[in-house]
Length: 88
Image 1 (cartoon, rainbow, N blue to C red):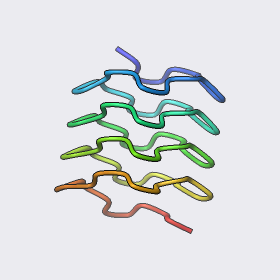
Image 2: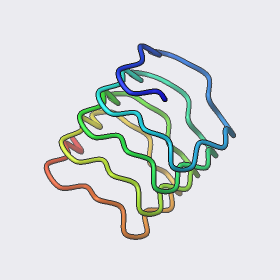
Image 3: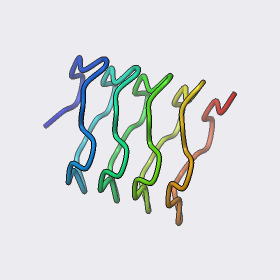
Image 4: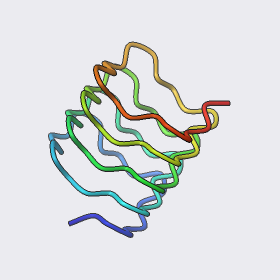
């Protein structure tokens, strides 16, 4: 329901968004800290500078995503797909 959404800088901290589809969405600089993001599809989403600290990204798909300057401190990444993801 969020595919292609424009949400730069959005405050989504502590949100429960399991199984959501953010394909191609712009979440640049958004706060997703402590969010429930299991099985979320972030393919080709803009996530530069996003705060994913202490979020649950189990089985999420982040293929081809720019995570430059993202905060992943304490994030749970069990079976998270990161192929082609820029982590610089």
